[in-house]
Amino acid sequence: MEKKTKVSLSGIQPSGKITLGNYLGSIKNWVDIQDSDAFDNRYCIADLHSITVWQDPESLRDQTYQLFAQLLAAGLDPEKCILFVQSHNPSHPKLSWILSCFTMFGELSRMTQFKDKSQRHSDNVNAGLFTYPVLMAADILIYDADIVPVGEDQRQHVELARDIAIRFNNRFPGSFVVPEAYIPKEGAKIMSLQDPSRKMSKSDSNDNAYILVMDSPDDILRKFKRAVTDSDSRVIVSEDKPGVTNLIHIYSAVTGKSLAEVEAEFEGKGYGVFKPAVAEAVIELLRPLREKSLELLRDKAYLDDVMAIGAEKARAITEAKVREIYEKVGFVLSKAK
Ligand code: TRP
Image 1: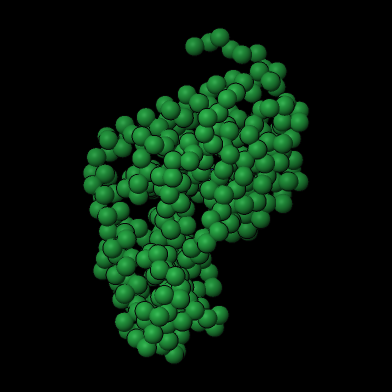
Image 2: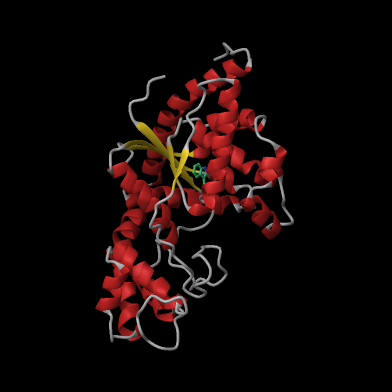
């Protein structure tokens, strides 16, 4: 099989709302990779993965539309990439089953995310939570992805996908491209505004801890004003000033200025000037995204159509791949329509 361009594939779960951390840490990278024109781009909303922890059905559906609108608003362009909802392409779970027969119980038991999540959701340690990385491997391998842009927390899952691909290829040569995690070097690590030792997370019980892409300018300003800082008021990066350091990182990521430039800009100015400046920069970054998303969300029929286009393109690629793999493992290919 000849491939012209290298393939980039990633996924994002629609469980919960999208934070500034999600935007700077993943979505913006996807858009940059798409716009670099160096790859064929495939991005999915991983709703199948979401139900490994309990979801309210109406919220899940709503968040899927919200996320889809935000991805479009952020600049993913259905002309330049295949943007689709994972459950709209049944090839993923089909391949996942086969790959699960090439994945060892021990390998899955060692996944740190499984260990974390089974502790956090100890009343619901379901089989899907355990086999989650196999489905993710299927998402990746079914498109012959070369790179998988993800955050550091997903590195182990991509490594497993590599191991599964290599194992499968040993048995059935040439079946899958062996993918590589593509983790931005200077990944903007955005921490909680209330506890800067923890990652900014939408599942935080304190909603002042995170900024959402859909937050209003007033909310953003209030959250930054309340952000935890330190007793002295110098705007410098320092290990013993994690709160201010986090704000400097955010300001730097949003404005493109280096950390040193930010320090210089606010030398002798104090938090009273710095915090509203960070808020202002974030408000302006998110404003077009929020406005465009709200506009798109007013037209669900349009979003449904764009989802359908993505699903059709995705299926066209993966149905052939599933047939190829079915044949390799020895299934009779059905002639049923
Ligand atoms: N598991 C990923 C996360 O939670 C989301 C995801 C699903 C994904 N399928 C993928 C990421 C395929 C990369 C490739 O962040």
